[in-house]
Length: 135
Image (cartoon, rainbow, N blue to C red):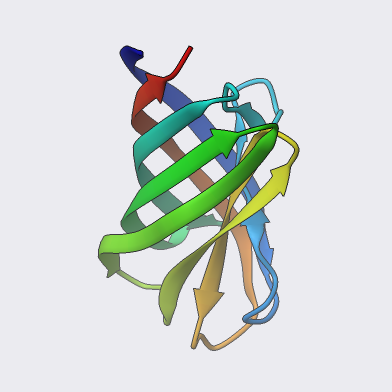
């Protein structure tokens, strides 16, 4: 078993037109994030959200804890728990989804209970994770 601690930068942009429209976050190259097979990730996802048009019209921050497991070619999310959130000038609350394709994933941020639409949203952040890899 090997243990490693790493950081991945993530970013995303788009509009929240309703409570089921997520903004997908990708790595710095615009791709999904790969989890090696036969491993477990304990991750912290920290995001800064800005609504930018003529200036900064809205902003917020949110932090999630996530546990993911990759085994036999299948990636699954065990937990995605919100640790804290602070919405300065955007109404509603955040929820995390995860789009999984094989052993890759992309976090998806949803805005719930808002006065939609919330347009011109830009998100930046990082995933800090511990990886346990079994060989």
